[in-house]
Length: 131
Image (cartoon, rainbow, N blue to C red; front, side, top):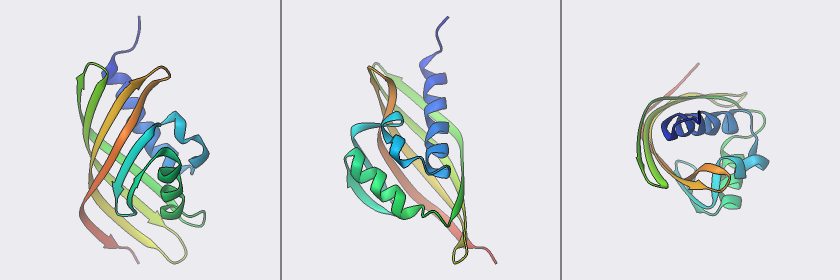
């Protein structure tokens, strides 16, 4: 029996977090469509290569991150889906220690290779520095 679209999309959201935390930026095509867009604190970009470059700048090697993406609300409409979720991300590095709370608004598209994110928007809710 095949997995449901909801289960596959839930996995896709988890892959997004691991992609960022493990800094797998060369594997962007396993998470995003070629024409994906991102609107985040790091800026607004279009296209998978620009998106990966932005993620590299926002997640430098010396900063450890941990993304907790919770409470995804998934709505599937044929080969398109929307996902709203909470995001808690911890940044821990020599010059940067902070925690962010954001709201993810994601869009996904079914591709020949499976579900991929076509849009990532992060709306900041709160931020705090950590000593």
